[in-house]
Image (cartoon, rainbow, N blue to C red):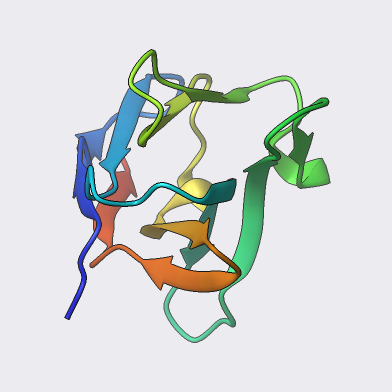
Length: 115
């Protein structure tokens, strides 16, 4: 089963920053949109940020101005820069990559924002 490799989660105090990274297999030659989702305990998974192949990224209202999604110089990577973190940002974060129209998900990385 194809896996995306995520890294960068952890425990951070409110107001702090974290950077999440996700790498798709180098064999992926048809990568389209790359996205980050999150799922908090007892809640549905929600879209946090999406970076299409061209054009501007889109963000959930709750993270606008605080989070930034970007593709890496290696075309198969995507990062999520998270600043001014809040306790309500606590969740498991998943990256999703579309390759030739099929969705591929990362295993999830835990982010906990707490003092």
